[in-house]
Amino acid sequence: MADSALPVILAIDDLPMNLRMIKVFLDKGYNVLPVKSGAEGLAIVKTKTIDLILLDIEMPGMSGFEFIQELKKMPDKTGIPIICITGLDPTPEFITQVINAGAKDFITKPFEPEILKSKICKILGINEHIIR
Image 1 (cartoon, one colour):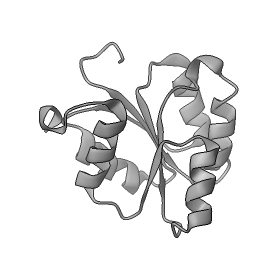
Image 2 (spheres, rainbow, N blue to C red; image 1 turned 90 degrees about the vertical axis):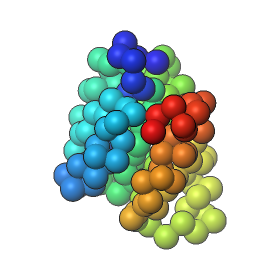
Image 3 (cartoon, helix red, strand yellow; image 1 turned 180 degrees about the horizontal axis):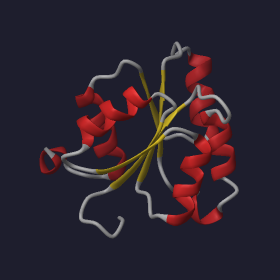
Image 4 (cartoon, rainbow, N blue to C red; image 1 turned 120 degrees about the horizontal axis):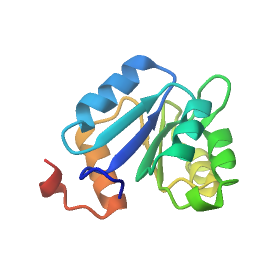
């Protein structure tokens, strides 16, 4: 994990309201770094130790899929787990596309904070009762 005692989560979403909600939901157990674009996210990844990425799929400029492609070009960063957050319909084809792109999991908007926390804890191998 990163230097702080809390796991560092990079949240990438083009909508400030979504970033605020993620920060509020996760602020007690995580160090949340919110950014509004894939480009900003890549800049953060290059300079900080990130434990997990919450990634919106549909964003202007650089989609979540394009962000994952760029992240794969950084060999020392390819192990960062990604949870995609999307408003898209989770069809079997879409789920397959997300997983094949390199994400560990996905969650649809609007999401239940407890489900998001559970997915994060599972991926990071953290006992949920410690974080709450």
